[in-house]
Image (cartoon, rainbow, N blue to C red):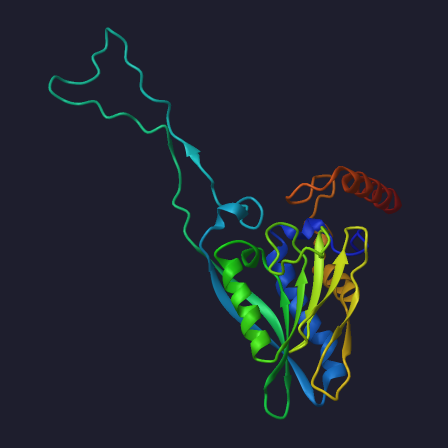
Amino acid sequence: MASPFPGMDPYLEGYLWPDLHNALAAKIRQALTPVLRPRYMARLSIYVVEDTAPEGEIGIMYPDVEVMRTSEPPVRYTVDEPPAPSGADVVTPAALSIPVILPVEIQIPTVEIRDTAQNQLVTSIEIISPVNKREPGLTTYRHKRQRLYQAGVHLLELDLVRRGTRPIAHAAVPDVPYLITLTRAQSGKTDVWPVRLQDPLPTVPVPLRRPDDDVSLNLGHVLREVYDEAAYELSIDYRQEPPPPALPADTRAWMRGLLERAAGASE
């Protein structure tokens, strides 16, 4: 079964995101391999980061983490009930108890295009994770972007998560839910594909080394195949609101109409 959305499905941005992230990376590799060989190859690279501030993802990516638990109500004493034996101070009960939020280890897959002759990195395809879009991960990821550019590596970034701060900041970038960007090595510029919720995902170029031509990556086709293979519709209740942040009123109205039509068509 297909997603009812023409492009990115916002319902995939919650606890399904880690599964989607892994599946997208694998499917992108599968899609690119036939058009890359024999001069290039696509490889998955996994790097591990610690989400040291996972509180913002509790209930979204980490739905099973308990936020807080209220304690028993404070003990109240009456005049007829002395608060404690003579000579002992009364310990004031805590109003509530909260769990210690420990760092969460996140494995982030990327797709690396390497030449087969020397195994050198040519293009990095980064699927932006929520941990990349808030501190301290945001600064760490921005440093990685800079290192790749300085090393002469093309960088294709897929930002398919609405929450958080985008690693790329420029006044000309429109305020849209999703963003695809391509920074060609030593070009001094970044190509931008703004994507609204109503838009299909674009087909984008994946640059290689000169004089080789770019190859194309149909992101919409990749997402549709992943959605179908994973049967995400079995895990999503489209009657509920999608994961935060809240959508603008006009977008919510469009989405309700879309989902109502999809529900009617399936009956």
